[in-house]
Length: 553
Image (cartoon, rainbow, N blue to C red):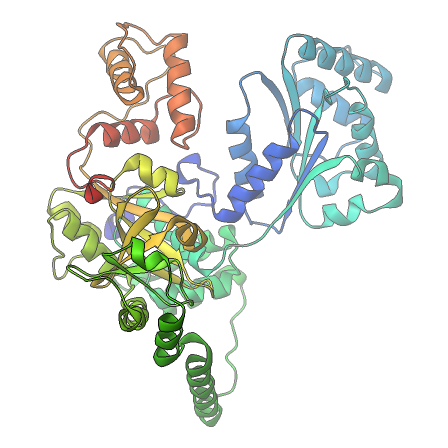
């Protein structure tokens, strides 16, 4: 109903598990790494737990997509089964034929033969059980017995148990201690934090075709408070908040719409505390006093003290960086860039500290985008969001999640999401990268930071400006023939710096080369050139515009 009003092509907050809306927070990525490790060559059981709606199913679907091709998978969604029913369900999932009314032993023997045959053919077998907190202790014990089949180095059946926190309590029971000892990887999935909630909401909006922010900053903070960072609740609240804003003809969603939507979702009105204005003034006064004390005693070190220390103990790095100024010990990895500067001295060192603190007050998303637009010789446009201004000038915003390696591969200036020591979000424009350092712009000031500092403070999300793609984003995969297959071969050959083959159909070698490219780029290595893969190829081939590495040459 509200899609056209807000410029959306789809419902961005449906609770259906649509792979197109996949958002992996840092916690989801960690969970995926733990599960992948647990399914290593010697793994037996891996355990993933989390509260309702935290994204366990999302992680499990992502895990399925990353399993090697030589893997047979049994996925059980309804584990409220007896031992016999469980074994029969495993046989059904693995396409193992069995006679009518089989016994427990017959099913066990069939599964064992299947596992041995799979191992001899170089294939793996993985069993994933969702909602595993509903498993009976006797059924879990039957699972353990199945995993007894092993070689000297490997379990022939690897099991992933996914469930709510009650599953952890279930596995602590005395009769399940043997199974608990076989769990090689455990991860408890926590809700999203405040910054991740904001990125999650914007990610879903962008997938649905809306690149400019739709929720106010206060609305997003309140959304995190009311949802507890649970993705499913976030979707429900956002969907109703959009409906409320649409009903009132509002162009943006505010705190009021989020609060109203949360009440509707929970079915309970949120009672406000009795008004006591005098308490508010007391709290404000107290907080200001504490803040001033902290700033004076900890966050802002004395300039005189720093200058004195610098003069008595000269930093050896200063002689190597004639065009850079080292900041104080509060941020030792950061250097301040000033055009035409002479060799730094103690006074410049102290000034650089003040410049950094000043820059942090300007580290807004709007300022970062202004610097990014400037790198492309474009300008912000009054009345338009940054992404709208980019579109108006022939570019588009594109959001990514990754690390410095991905930033270097893409090689474009970026707006990077950074976190300070208190895990508060700030924004910077990344303008250049050399062998050891990265050039950030905060507001109107630029600083060189070393890689260790950047890795510690980088939040993992960033946006680029790119030229809108002119190629078809329809998937290219096995079964496709004709010119699009040759285009894919040409593009991969150019990126991978190898000779081009003449192709008329999608063959095995093209599949291998495509998977290699996808793995190197941190994409889903499924051997199919879908929207993400084609967009990445187009971006790498279209090298017009500013580049991170060329900026320091």
